[in-house]
Image (tube, rainbow over all chains, first blue to last red; front, side, top):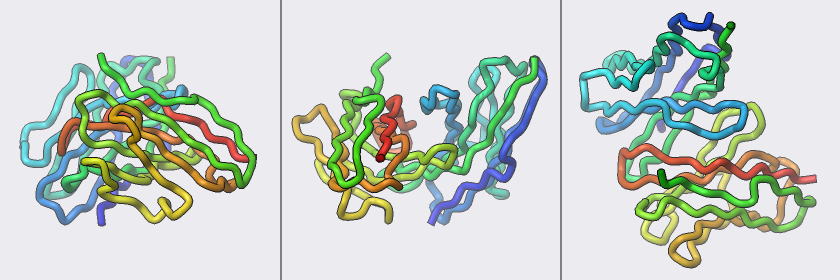
Length: 114
Length: 113
């Protein structure tokens, strides 16, 4: 079975500062993918970033980057130059198997202070 | 950019009634999913669908639930006899292939009274 753990229920960051959201996971699969999704108050699920487990290079998307530590089964999200619009719930998710079913963590609520 | 669309955005129903939640996945996607999120809680997998059949389902997806792709574009989730605890946000998602990101619809908020 796959598990995803987000142990911090909430975090706060000052606008323009950097924040890191933690995530650990467990799977016996050798081939898997990791994602961060953002859920603003509108409840949409928006893809932030994707990492293939076979790639050593950390994924980057503009102000968002990940620190993927495969041996430690850790997948943290760094948000640089935080903006007010970054305030949302963030979910870490793991995709395994032919179905690419996503297993989600409990999420973390990020608030951004002006 | 193509997107997954879900209707209705909000459905209110009485306990014991049947509801059908509708989704139109992205047209060239092959994998379809339903997830649910009880307010403020984690997003839970219900079922995945590929090649016109269920490929995987969770413990939540019991005999009260069914899915269908009736016409090659729509993907529906039916709850036969709703319970109070079925109140949640239901998300449809689709992806093009294994490992591709899932694209989510905006969700249907189901309220069972």
